[in-house]
Amino acid sequence: MVKGYGRALLGLWKEVAERDRNASRFPLTAGRDCAGVVEMVGGDVKNLRQGDEVMAVVPGFWPGSHAEYVVTEESCCSAKPNNLDFTQAAALPYVASTAWAALVSVARMDPRKKPSERVLIHGGAGGVGSMAIQMLKAWGVDKVVTTCSKDSADFVRGLGAIPIDYRAVDVHDQLIAEGPFEVIFDCVNSDLARWSDRVMGVWRNSVHVSIVSPLLRDTDRYGVAAGLASNAVKHFCRSYEGAFRGRWFSYAYFSPSHECMQQLSKFATEGKIKPIVERVQSFEELPAAYEKVSQLHGRGKTVLTW
Image 1: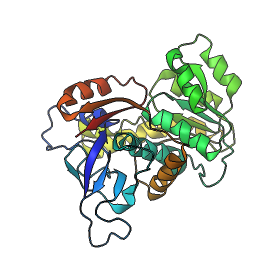
Image 2: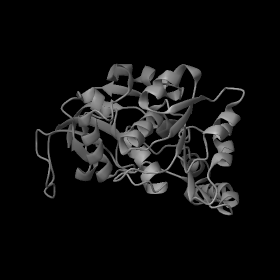
Image 3: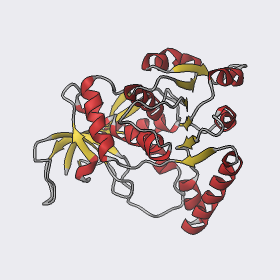
């Protein structure tokens, strides 16, 4: 059990907004990550003790982190870096776990050695996108290209990525010139992201992975069975054409990883990964925080303090 000092809101609005407005499946405790002090441990916990300062994620089907006390698994926790305060630490775990699920679990990149893949990220200025850039550069990836707004170009360039303005008239030509790519990572859903299959390497086992999945919306709208079927059909249709050219498409979903959390603490302590916090708001300002996150435009994370 962790008594938290900060909870990040990235992904929170999707948890709420993608649910059926008429649904009665409550209470719903939102939030997936936090940072705080360990208050209690279970009998099988081996490496944590009361008083430890940690950052943590909460498994997807557990009650969330927007509460005074948060319960999670030991494998979902790692030591809070001494060079970060609780607010900064709370901004890291969810975005890192989501990026890890996409890049490692789905795209099969190996973070234990320097990956050779060239990577294109759609939406690199947001919370998950900016974390993905930092993780890739910390792993030693040479070429990371990201689409973003013109205003965010200097920001993503500072993280180590090559920015491309998604509104530019010649955006397609710019992407073709920078490609081909072995990994494409969608943090946003757009026509450009769908078009970019054309800049994937052919017969290089290239992977296009997206965290913008219709699964939650479809299961809430049609029910579990029909929703899963609908999502499977969309996945198949998106994957069918590329498979004949040695290219693959898949959705990725947030999934806690002990290895990710341990590496996150290490890289943050070494300064290779830094939290990007756009704003910090108190619990009393929660409606305003939800409103900000619902706009789905921002640079980094919104963090809620308790």
